[in-house]
Amino acid sequence: MKFPARLNLRAHDILWGEDLATVSVWRRRLVCLLRTLYAVGRDLADGQLTLRAMSLVYTTLLSLVPLLALSFSVLKAFGVQNQTRPALLAFLAPLGAKGVEITDEVIRFVNNIKVGVLGALGLALLIYTVTALMQKIEHAFNYVWRVKRPRPLAQRFSQYLSVLMIGPVLVFSAMGITAALFGSQTVQSLIAIEPLGLLVEFVARLLPYLFVIAAFTFVYMLMPNTRVRFGSALVGAVFAGTLWQSLGWGFAAFVVGSTKYTAIYAGFAIVIFSMIWLYLNWLIVLVGASLAFYYQYPAQLVTPGRELRLSNRVKEKIALLAATFIGRNFYTNAPAWSLAALAGRIGVPLGSIDPAIDALIRAGIVTETADEPTCYIPARAFEMITVKELLDAVRVAEEAPSLAAETLPREPAVEAVLARLDEAVDKSLGGRTLRDLALSSVEPLETRAAAH
Image (cartoon, rainbow, N blue to C red; front, side):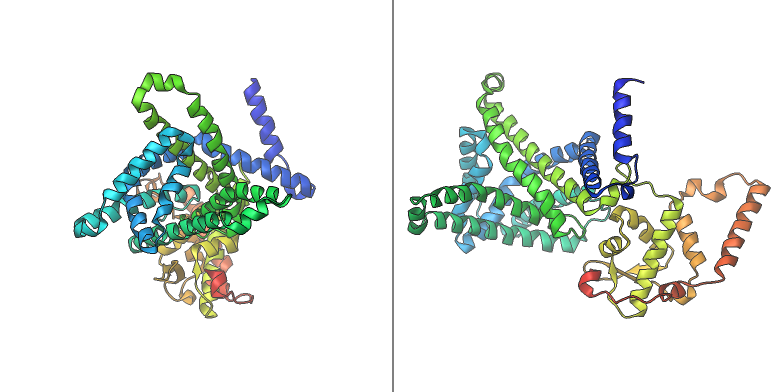
């Protein structure tokens, strides 16, 4: 066996070769950390994260000026538009003197755009361009979080525009307040007193990291079309924010020392550097989102593969649990379950419960509500639906019409076995309904906040 294969086999044995329930707490935590790092590295090596980061670079370049124009108009209404240039300068600082030129050029373009005189069509195109960027970002985050359903169209416009109009005001206001605070006479007098001066300097160096981490936490919680816990978003934001802020220094040194690239590409060098910088930023954001996902769903780390391959037994149990919880809340007048809440209650990632819910919807067992987020209730009376009917719906959920059981060769002995199996299941269940299953045990009613 070659060395890489032996190394891969050894790593597999260390990470997945033992039952974590039988080892010490510290060893369990170490293995979980190594599994998480392996999973994030596997996602990177798979190429999808890098591909989506490159796609976001292209979309960002197309939408940058419209995005800044829309944000600038809102900032101008609140009187904090002067913070736009310093923020853009800070973002492009690793590009050196060229970053200043790009910033001035972008600001000039933004100032020349008069949103008030664009007209209805021009304003609609402006909003569409910005919304398309946000939708592209959501798709990338949904891929990381294994979410297959994007937001409804109306919800996209409302939430995206809320972020674009409120987010910049809060961020730039905080930056302005911080700058004013550190420039005040009181703080300046404290700096002259040691060791308070060192403490103030440390806080000043720490603040950029805190701002970036706070912004990343906000993005990680908002952009995926699923419920992201604050702790999970914070873990990903701390990693990505720290790496993002620190990477700027290294990239700035790279730009300064890359005179040979400038000689080769001439004026195009700054364009290439800008695209590389944007790519690295988006890649860091997506890697942080991947880390947040695995932190929230450690069950996703039980196998080396990215996608959990569920056995038929697990699929049936997930569907039975989902129907039980949906029916129990319905018959006890408790709040309806959302998809994210059901996944959290059952303890599986969204990608594992989504197929089961789809199967129940197609079979007419449950239906979606018009709530936000979407919740689930019985599509018809559960006392009229047998457990056997649910199990049959799960069994045929992923059958393709071109390769259904009926299209396979009919062998009398095989058909007899399958028929007896169905009869045995039906007889053993004794006509038990989903209502019986839902009300078979009593547990405390979940509050609406918990269910959502």
